[in-house]
Structures are given as C-alpha cells and as structure tokens.
Picture 1 (tube, helix red, strand yellow):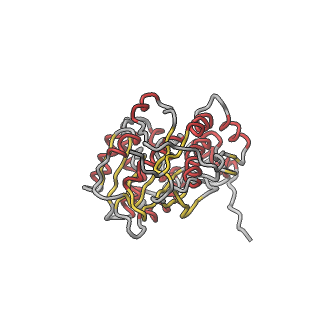
Picture 2 (spheres, helix red, strand yellow; picture 1 turned 45 degrees about the vertical axis):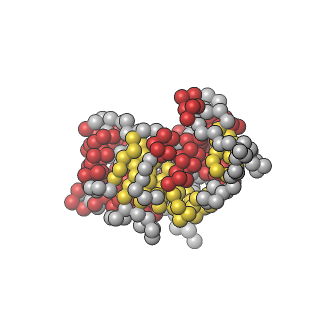
Picture 3 (cartoon, helix red, strand yellow; picture 1 turned 90 degrees about the vertical axis):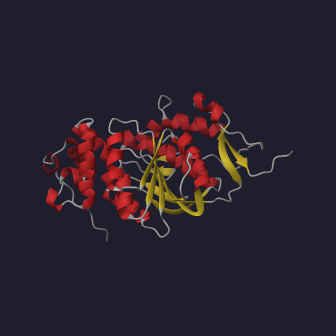
Length: 333
C-alpha cells in the first residue's frame, strides 16, 4: 500500500520563513524547498550547499535577495531529486567532457563538477546577466582548469566551437523555444560520439504532460515537442525518463547514423539569422509520420499553450510548419 505524504496544515505553511515557501506548501501540501524553507545550520551544510550559498551571495551582490532565490529555483539545485540525477549522469562510466547549454548562475555546473572530479565542462551561454561574469569566475576558481566558457548564442557558438575532446554528456537547457532546442541538438552532433548522451531538461510526456505550476509549465512544451520530433525522425533513442514531478527531464542517446543529416526551417523565424541557415545541396522533405502535438493534463495549461497571444505554443506550431528534414544523400555533380 502506497504511503501518503504527510500534509502540512495551513498554520504550518504560514509559519514557513519565505512567501514562496507558503505558496508552494499550500499548493503541494508539503515543503518542496528544504534549502529555502528549512535550511540546515551553516556548520552542518554540505559541500554543495556551501557552494550554492556562495553563488547566492554573488547574485545578491549584483541584484536583490529575491534574485538569488529565483536563480536557484530556475536550476537543478532547487530540486534534490534532479540534482542527484545530474550528479549520477556526470559519474557515468566514460564521462570526461560535459557540454552544457544554459549556465545561468552556475548551480548545475557545480553539481556536475563536484560529482565527477576529473570531468571538464564546456559551458555555452550568453553570460549577459548582471551576475554572469562573477558567478562564472567563482565556478572557474572553484574548479581551476576545468571550465571553458563559450559566450554568445548557442546557435552560433556550438557550431563554431573547437573542443579539446568530444562531449560525452550534453545537457540542453538553454532557450526553451521549439526551434532553439532542435538547433542545439543538431549542432552538437558534430561534437559527440555514438556513446554520447543527451540530457534534455523540462521535457514531459507530449500526450498528457503533467504540469504542477500552470504559470510556468508551458515552457516545457518547446523542449517536449523538439524531443518528440527528434525521436520520430530517428535522431535519438530514449535511455531514461523522469516524468510527473515538479521538474521533468529525459536522457537520450544520439543516433549518428540517422537517415537525415539535419533539420532545417524553410524560413528562418529570426530574420537576423536567415543568412546563417546552411542549405544542403539535397532537397529536404517532410517525414510521413504526423507532427507531434502537446496535450496537457490540466485545462489551464492547455489553454495557455494554445493562446495565440502567447509565445510558446503558436511559435512552436509555426516552426513545425516550416520544418523539413534533409536526407543523407550525395549531391549530383
């Protein structure tokens, strides 16, 4: 018989020290943020927690106390189960080079490098937030010689990167729009081996996505649709999934012998990148399998995703309509 989690009373939730703790305690009926709501004394804090505290202090210096909370909430460090999974992924046999799109404040970088003391990290990010330079410098000091930063849009920096070694583990957690996730994956194919793994954050079931927080849940739609399309086209195969929680993700293995060279958009959504879209000499085509679509378990999330005034749903549908697969072929002379 499944044991039910003890529910917090309204009074117990109200006694928590941060407004966010109260809100989520009432929503989940338990405390989902032990690091924020009931932190251990500094003397008992783990090595990771001390590193996260140092990052929080840096972010506060360049912003507000709430900024420090928000940056951690946006990272794997907010959710113990996800942090543990990322650490386990970094410790997998054969992982020596980790490539990550989306550095943010460096929480996930610390998790990965603490878990695997011999691994190197190739970090791809715009690094344009007020705290970016300082948090990057902190992580590089903490792990000397193990962190390389590639500054700029990943759609440009990943293809241009000259890495010391292929990526054994690729974490895609940058911009969450459908086409950006596709581009990140396709661009990394030149930097991986058949044994490489791809970890996609914020991916749920495309038919029945369980969303616990409607206000932010729809940002999972872009990565979810992208992974679905990649799977249907034969670019990736599933290794493990973690669905149904507050944070969700999938671990995939790339198929480097897929029947397609790349995915292209027939019209670039960003006019500034139109001249940079590589055209292959062989014509692309649309696979016969139907396009993936998002279905949410909660009506509010489904409505928000379909809202024509929004960003994620309409933009993803537009990108899918423009998407073609470029087949492996030898151009005629």
